[in-house]
Length: 382
Image (cartoon, rainbow, N blue to C red; front, top):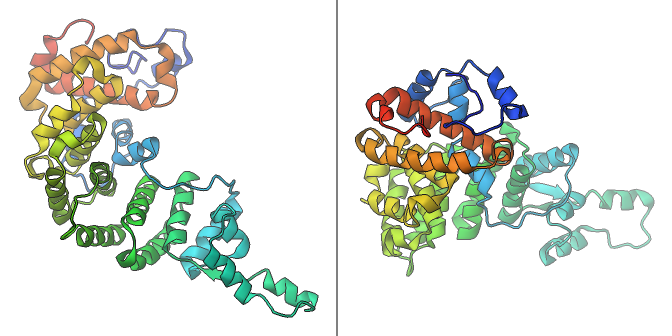
């Protein structure tokens, strides 16, 4: 049961690779416990995770991690370099005061200050060109009120810089929630994506987001874009927030927009993952089967390691793997071939480590919970 670098199947990494040596040193993972942890956490989607290695393997697959990797936000985040001091000052001023000094404001907006901001600074500046040095010095400290655009941009910058201060982000969320009733759908989705990718749980903010989206969609001439439905579901699953009314509306809007066929296979798989994480598979307007069919529409052989292993993982989360062991075994056989043909460098870069953890978890489920089916698998799989 050692964590020997072979991943879910043999011959994944060469015996002399650094990844193999590292994994050989991590021999304390108990696969039976890992499998039980999967099902145990599945019963508590709104709870916390423990500190075991098995828990860490599962955490790597939460919607938060996937949001970070896939960069779901549609915002164009300024690429300015933020040092820790400036970033903290930005968050403090916006969250506590709702205002920003001119220098930080310009840095936040990437030096493309809107006309209203320029007019605001001009109005705040002294009119006397012959003012004393003390007066000029005071003019540089003028501040400007932040609107929702700046509030959301601040959360996006914190997300892109991986900066978290839970107290300040909670204060920022309060300001964002107050402005949401008059926000555009784009800003609502950006705020949801930013807080989700940050990994900051804020139930009041997301209840406000839900109310705003429901109001926008009520009586709307056209349903929202399918990709937006997927994005909303992912954001709420990352918050561990089962908002029944919102997800009922998401199901209705999806059907109105053409159903699962309006989604790409990747989008369908993402939506399945969100529903499975929140235990909403059977409550999503009967769309689970159609979503799964769309996710596998390219064919199992063409899905690739990432999507195919994620689909297996989703079936485990949704508690469907037990009743569908033959299908699981067929998927594992396909995965085995893809793992054996993968380059060794895959497991040490990019999404490789998370994928390796997912494969170990799937092997644990098959080996210890579905023993009879596991014995029927080929040598490549076991």
